[in-house]
Image 1 (cartoon, helix red, strand yellow):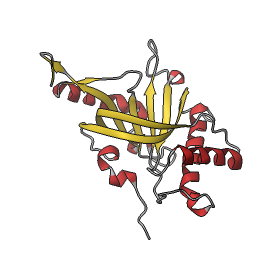
Image 2 (cartoon, helix red, strand yellow):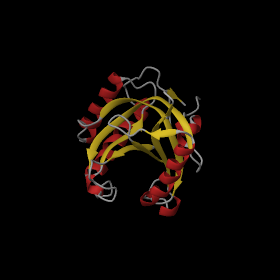
Image 3 (cartoon, rainbow, N blue to C red):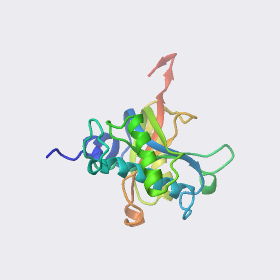
Image 4 (cartoon, rainbow, N blue to C red):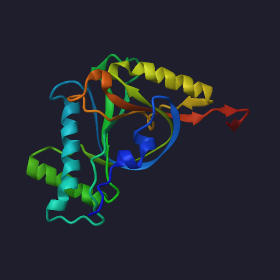
Length: 217
């Protein structure tokens, strides 16, 4: 029997960093993604509904091995962790959670092409009665980033982010947040089952090399 693929174990540099900041070059990865706005903690809010869709699609693909739809190149896998890209508009602050913009996403296994993806969203819609129209097949090339493991409450992430900013300054890196590159989080813990002080979250920020005398350092 073939081994079940676990992306966290296979790509430890992406998913299991240490609590000290490091530089990483992130390759192109394919995701199922949903964009939205609002407080992620709102019960039955837009964010929580998006999670239901994402996991519905993921588990439909994973469990296709038990159905009649044969996917070319299929292999069994552990569903990768939930991830999120986050930003807020000019003039808004991090405390205004109702104003958050986000793209919630989960990595797809390599055998999932757009045809398989379309089958999965139709399957979830027809069999589970879930609206999947906002779900997108998304290829994302993140490139050069600094990342670090944050342990604790999501609300205390600023402490870790300050250490990451200092690391960037020490290594001649500029934070490169823009419309195509966002603050990125990867959730390694289930907040429903984990004490808030023990939550593990990968924080990732896009960066670029500082130009010195007309040359990239």
